[in-house]
Length: 138
Image (cartoon, rainbow, N blue to C red; front, side, top):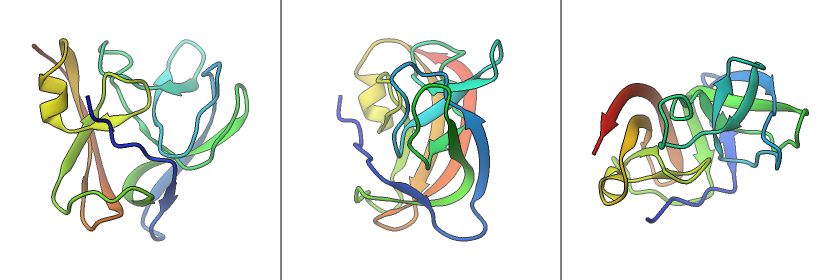
């Protein structure tokens, strides 16, 4: 599986919607990680496509943080990344925690839950259009 390795994620403009939250992930979170919110403790964890609960991506990490520290999460609008994506290419939540990948990479692996994360509008600008469908795919 070829995940898109992101090590930077920043709001592109004032229209990017952001929230703050507390990290629950034991190893912390880094820039560009996809995150979901666990209802039981209201903390944010690395998302993955393997279970319906963990595939419910809320947004992308814009402030690296350790366990129980505050983070900032982009939940809509545009973010600038450090990896060059092809304009018009859409990325989904990967099987790998906190990562995004092409739909074809998901289809080549085990069963998963479909979560669209965003589409590149330019080479480094990812237009977030997060949609956790809850749909299981073979």
